[in-house]
Length: 429
Ligand code: AOS
Ligand code: ZN
Ligand code: ZN
Ligand code: ZN
Image 1 (cartoon, rainbow, N blue to C red):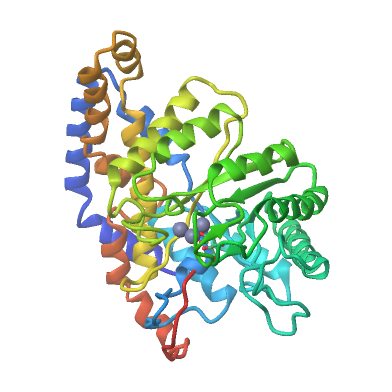
Image 2: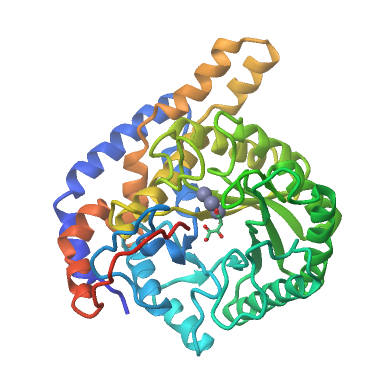
């Protein structure tokens, strides 16, 4: 049940194939001069996948307004179909990360089958205790897992356990917990008590994890709470993950740090401690902007991948990060943004793979700062597009996913069945 016909993709590829082949051959020759086998890199890139967030296929918004796009998904089945298009064309996103209750449906096995028909599986489940749901007994206005009131905390714990149960039906293996709990006034919250309550609540969720599941704790410096946030940084996240046990690890959303923070170094620390859960990739200029991955600071993304590739290269035990996108699209077609972000993440991975690790090690040992930096730059400055194009084409995807997507008329087509949504006030994700 492919959303776009194979013939359409093949026809589009036919117009680009000759140039793509020439470029691949030329890059292969350049890499061979550096003793790198292009096909080996290609195979590694082909086995790399990054999950699509189900909420990412809808149009997000700012605190001020939301401007809906054409043919927006109406429900989780529409979202899966859009994810199917992304995977079909870009071939880098074999899984979807669901969000409960936004993606609730009445038949989980049907959902699982539908996903499989698009060649999709399910990545981490995301709980939501940062907004109140219809008919909910206790409000999260003043917190959820860390709320001063025990009944509110119990409700939040129960919701997370429900997310695990749904995830089990879908073949998911992880639960991501992000809470907006915090305060807007100095004095509003007792810092240590709130953290203790977080531990008490997450311990109950942790106890409900199946044996082969992991729990991803996502930190965030601020928003919606702007004075303090209970799990505000990797230090708090690390303390909580350590207290909980080996199945709890720290998830790094690139936008959740203060400006100029050295994120790649946080990644290195978490790897060293065996506590790196994985990522929410996106980009930002000021805060949790949720801009497209690598759109603002591609070198930073590359430096994160440099740490990951280096850890894999050195065989760090237990190193197994989960990769997810987490973006909000206000001015683009979400399908286009997600395809280009997936390619950007793949690109950063490929560039990190071609860094000469022996050369870098030698430069570091010799305190040759310039050569060390050059070793990294040489990877980053290599145009690896021909590798990505080849990976996609060999997997039945599009050499140029966005071009093929536009040519397919998919958005116009689905807009016929999906009614236009009225714009409204805020809708940040
Ligand atoms: C919020 O800022 C976080 O990035 C979370 O990952 C959140 O759960 C996600 O954006 C869905 O709302
Ligand atoms: Zn996130
Ligand atoms: Zn973010
Ligand atoms: Zn965020």
